[in-house]
Amino acid sequence: MNFKYVLTALLIALLMASCTTTSQQNNDNMEQKPVAGVDGNKYVPYDERTGDEAVVYFTRNLSAEGLIMAYEQVNKMIEGRVAVKLHTGEQHGPNIIPSAWVKALMEKDLKGATIIETNTYYEGDRYTTELHRKTLEVNGWTFCPVDILDEEDTVTLPVVGGKWFDKMSVGSHLKNYDSMVALTHFKGHTQGGFGGSNKNIGIGCADGRIGKAWIHTTPGQDDQWDIKEEEFMERMTESTKASIDFFGKHVTYVNVMRNMSVSCDCEGLEAEPVVTPNVGILSSTDLLAIDQACIDIIYAMTEEEHHDMLERIESRHGLRQLSYMKELGMGHDRYILIDLDNGGKRITAKEAAKGLKPFVQEK
Image (cartoon, rainbow, N blue to C red; front, side, top):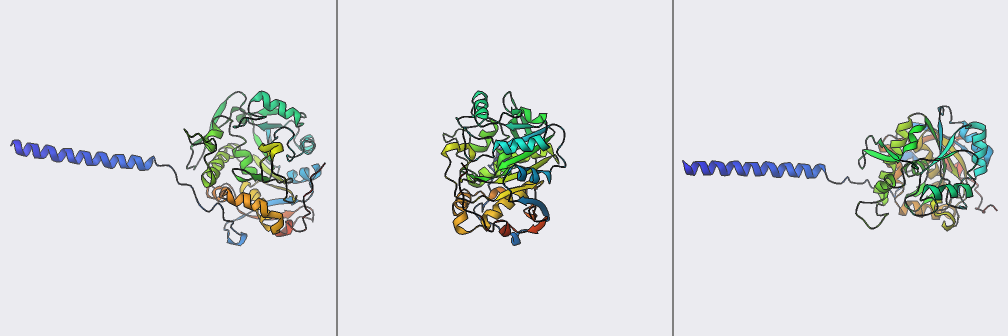
């Protein structure tokens, strides 16, 4: 009897140990780090894309009048308390959207709207609210209210369908608004490869201490910017999704393809010299479509015109922004490009990039 008892007890113990090991393996599998996508350095030509077409408007008129015309094509759902998400730049930054253009737009079409910003993750001219407000004054953003969203606190917004986040930390004031206009200076970017509307919102609405850290830094790392390439693009895009989902249909996008350094406006006077030609202004209610159209125009340029920008975009695997937006249902990578300068006819990105003049810095 004792032998049978011992044998039975041993079998039970082995069975329990096996179940515990299997359970632990299942838990470990569930807690494994997500796997980033691939091919962020590979451009997908238009005829290889699938799905419906969105509408993107285009003008070559780089002026306050051109900005107003582009915006007025896509403003039907902008109502209530309106936030204008704008990169206001480091002190004396040479490439930001001219404040006079934005003033003209707001006086005509966005009366009572507020420019929104957040403090930066890096130490500089906009690291604290006090420094940020001084920089706003230096750069001429004094003609309307500017709300630093994380001046007081942060809140989290859900990330639906994300693999890196289930929520994103943003400036608490974001929830004070009913609609958002993403007014974006399209250019290169040191981490993202390019900075379009996706970057403007994904980094620009995340608060300076928590949200931006979630996007840029693996906890415990000495390198503040250790998250790179496809993983960074996906984290940034999930952050964007949290903000645009909050506004629903009450968000629209304008991209200004002017003074396109390969550097972000965060680099201010230290930005790399501009060599890519100025193009024009695009607008859409479709986030993916507008950033995709800008990229398509860049790729449609001559080798001399787009060499530096393509090197920046592909070396950072920045095209993963576009493919991940599509995976998350954040818009369409096929679109009808409407030429506002020629009676609203449909054109291609190649036609939009035709006859560009070499860049000359404005004085």
